[in-house]
Length: 227
Length: 204
Image (tube, rainbow over all chains, first blue to last red; front, side, top):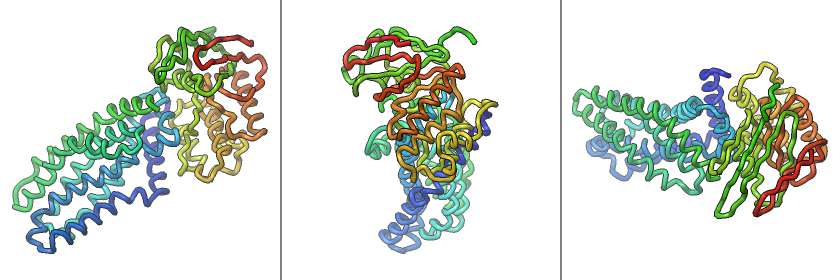
């Protein structure tokens, strides 16, 4: 039996290779994020005062939606080419491969968005003192978005046009992350301590990443059974 | 080697979309045996293979099967990845086996030498089939479940499939194969499925 580490590495490499070869698709969520931010700046008006006040909410809502956009393709390709059924047929827990998939997906969405967050903050006139909190909430909260989203993606992979259903299933689960994420940045703008919110976001992420792979495994089995 | 069969199906029954596909189907497959699964479209060949593979659980009766490899309608190959990358992934995921042939050797055996670095996206349906067959060599398992392995293959490909099945039987493995074309395997049984009910006849 190959060890979990080797299994994780093999799956992770596979995901990143696939993403690199379909770069346009992989970059879609990031492009969406910045297009939407630009539109907000244009729509709300470039009054730093107003835009800055809304910036925490705008950033987190758009990060949520961009995540959702990326989720639809998380299992789709593997489902279509039959790799997914082979993965399920291993007869072994899918925890490690699913964790590797989720991690790779997070690198392409949550992590990439965190790295680009300063640019988003700049576009939205987010006050400088809240930038640190923005980065911290994103890095602590985004793993939960990917992990929870993977459950919805696994449940809807067998459905054509399951995008809206996916949103309905997953967005309610995103709400706590959204509230604490945007709330913490707003607090930081007033110069308040946000450590508690960051810890809470991290706790939600740890819980999601731990439990989600089991739910994903069950959901994938159901989806494949129907095909 | 134990006398325990590699595959035993007992009182298998299954309904799909309101149609009864199987009722009280019983057969076993031991080491070195092969069984050709025949029947018209919709008679449940793929469903039976999926049930044995473990992809489909909504059935009655019991299925006991050894470690198995399932080759379905979908190739199971990432289209953006090369043949070698796909097979290496399978090798990493499958149970480690010391006697596993190198990937290049497996690809050469299925007539795909030189295609190691070609993305599967650029391959023809027949070439994809061949890479899928290489998987049988890279991940060894005693029981092979093949769903229409001859589809899209040329004449030499069909000879290749026959050869691979004979090698597998020679190693003490077993093969269950759904096919419309006669494989002409020596001493292989045939299981003929009707659209409504199933009947067994043992050719071996």
